[in-house]
Amino acid sequence: QFEDLRSRALDLGFVYAPAPKGDPDIESMLARREPLVLAIPEGDPLAGVADIRPGHLDGRVWITVVRQPDDTNRAQFLAACIEAGFVPEIAYETADPLTSLGLVSAGLGLATVQESLRDAAPAGIVFRDLPWFKRSVEIHLAWRRNDRRAVVADLRRAVGSRQ
Image (tube, rainbow, N blue to C red; front, top):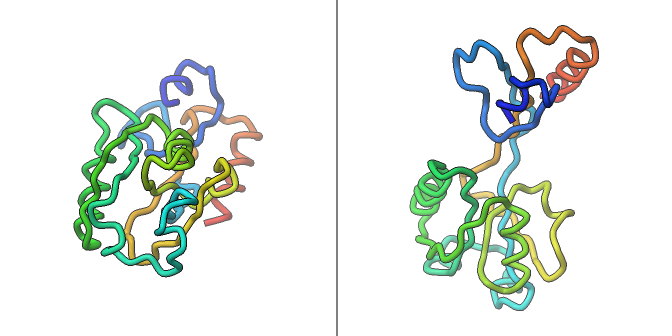
């Protein structure tokens, strides 16, 4: 989306990473930080467990999101899992979290997704909170530095006031 902002195809964008430091064209601000929740296929025995602990997840088949070829998301996810006390078996990688939820719904494995996607999930998925899992998703609002339009400033103020 940063390139679309530069080319003026977009006026504002919600992105998963902040604008690069020192970018002469683009600015951003943290709009929201969301915890990750565990998505479990409805027919999986784990779906009946109310208090999921790291031991429940060790060695289970996982679905992860890789957004770019050079994405560090997988390495960060693995590090967070190991720190929490389990090692996932990553069997599938998807381009976005909604695709991951589709694979979970088909019974192919477990996934963590941002909490706000619960309502967008297909049928056949049970969600569990993982308060001990120290990963979250950051969503940033990005805009062109030189855009002085009132509507852009108003949205930036509205997002900033929710912090």
